[in-house]
Image 1 (cartoon, one colour):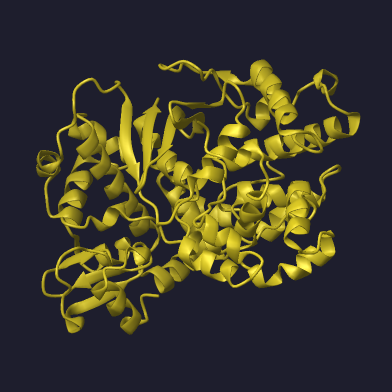
Image 2 (cartoon, rainbow, N blue to C red; image 1 turned 180 degrees about the vertical axis):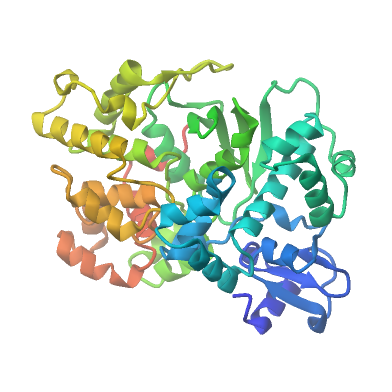
Length: 489
């Protein structure tokens, strides 16, 4: 969008928050860059230059606006909508792959050369993977500076910087303030904060309907791993450097997030996975406008706009849970998962109580005795084959996965049919166009609305909903009285 100057100028003049994260406005006369909704008086059009990323602005020598804080905008919805190389690379960079494995590690995961990845990212985003990762480290550093009392040296390394000098130079360059000045400007937090806990605000594009989002997560929560407590969804997180516990609660203009981490180096990854879990980088206006064009869906969209797709923080975990949930009720699927957690999950300490384990990793389940699983023999075979393939790396499900290829590999496994592959694509891989024409709830909703209820006919009828069929599924499910559709009391 940043190449459409006229459209960008209109968005800046109208201070339209829907475009935050889509592009950034660099002001030639002041040397700063802003989000489109910056509250200051818009500059003259001839003094505005538009960039596709904060990293590109920083590469061009601009510093972040202290008023609108463009580093805190929701991410671009492009990276969750697309499955090409650039989108897959951006999802992996957000998950901290460059910080942990470098650009060669990013290239290895994507199956391309480092040169080709550099070239494509520069062409589309105006910055290479190192610059994009550096901008992300700067955001993490600012967050730690403003929300904790940690020493600056510890913040530097927790944010991913290799030296204190690089940390100081980057903060000054990006924010035009030293780390100490940033901390002095931050609002004072009250006493009594839990040691190691961080309280954050996760922004999103309005509208956001929390009912099916949190209702689904709460209704399918695995005891010991997830729970709904005091108006918040809580769960344990398996992270690169340790484990964490997160509590997420819906608010009118943000998601309240409370993180407890064993290692602060996991902060960036934890935030990225929480945003992905709640689908916070979606563009609900564009999605709802397209679905509203169907006269049968329009009343559902108008009644409760802004539905998101409840996703996951761990793709392998969700695939295992999807197999456990084949042809059984939600309650039975939770029971099966809870048994696995009790027998094979890694124990964790929860300061608030209630959460006891991490969901078992595929490696912990690879040697499981099939006879110990209280389920039909065919499903036992499916589960053991899946965890073995996940454990040995021959099947990889992650944020950088190629969606069609991953779906084909899932369908090649014995006992994995279209429903299982499609629900993994929808909730784990994040494909916004994944569709569930064989799902019982979808078919019931289709009959009630006068849509075709057979899978083939419903798939053909849903063609105009593309590329947002995963969101259409949420609106169809919402016609039922199942607990997944209601925010818990």
